[in-house]
Length: 508
Image (cartoon, rainbow, N blue to C red; front, side):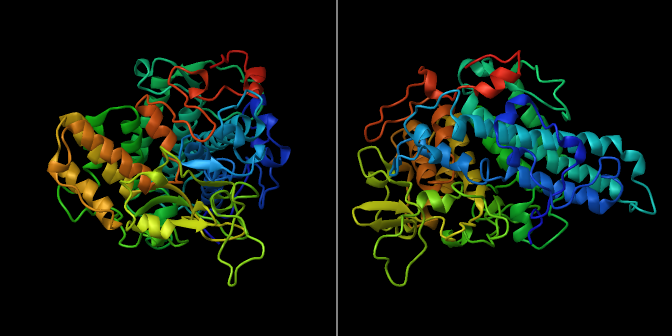
């Protein structure tokens, strides 16, 4: 069983966050816990506290949030996938940009799952602080003060991760008016009843400021290498110092703070190849990209959420279910893993599959694209039913490309280090290499980096953010038109459940 396979639900969390989250199913918001103890004794032993930390990961990696749906929704908003089933439960409204305040399976549920996780984190943080007087010998070791800071770092990292992803759907991009537009209700205290539903939206910039504060605390207090388990498995599934730094590079890139991206990324990336994180977990590109998506992962995996048959993402949440082709009739023998064929790759103009710059020899194409009849499908997730592929959150390849883009945009040059970083990712997959002469300008090089991100992270949930952070239109596909940055549906509406429960909430 993985370190996050067990959970503990405090009795005091029964009220959860706000009435807005009650629109989600009772089973989701009040799951039957494997172990339930009173809040009066929840912090009485190190083991009980550790179980609560493990439980926080479980809330964040729920299939309806970062265990699958967030990654899927981010990718299908753009133009690299075609909806095949017209199923409203599996993202049809997201794909064709017809979501409303009442859209249960995406707008309402993503908000509810995200804020449920945030509240669970806040309740834990409140309890961890309130019970410091108990952390003494003989029950607690003399080193527990440092351990508690590490637990707080993990919790604050997870809170930052939740707020960051909610911002990408429900708030205007930071580039729009420098973060001054309405963001999210910034809830930082645990709610155990419905007394504090009313909370106005902080600005986008204020939410990002809190995210960066949480990540800085996490960086300062998380261990260099997780204390339990063995590298790389635990290092890929539980936050450590480099995890916080890596996420900061993404957050700062999303904010357009390119000089700060460089400062953070330099902590993980040497000035020249070979590119291996110099301290903490030795993150590096793995020679075999398929191995990165295997259950064990590699040191390229900075954070992934694992699943088992006993701890699966849940029906219609799994990445393989969405992207793998449906089982044909009659089935082939032997039958490879199949999904439900919800989304195929877009073969039309503008789709990445049809881009001539994605070489036929690229192993990301030869390994991850499967032709079934006349349709092509993404085979990055291949665990098969019940689709227990780890849900990717961040990889070392992204840190390299974050740094490359930041260097190009901050220097406005065809930067030599950026070229080396870009070629490291592209060359790993036999995608070809660039020279400085390949680019007529810094803008051309930035476009090449964006193309590389699109190929490298196809189906991993970065596409929507990459479009919105640069205020680019969401391209059209098939019969679905483009969504311009000025269109109302460029971001999602605030769910009606939150509007009904929170008297200070305002619509998008």
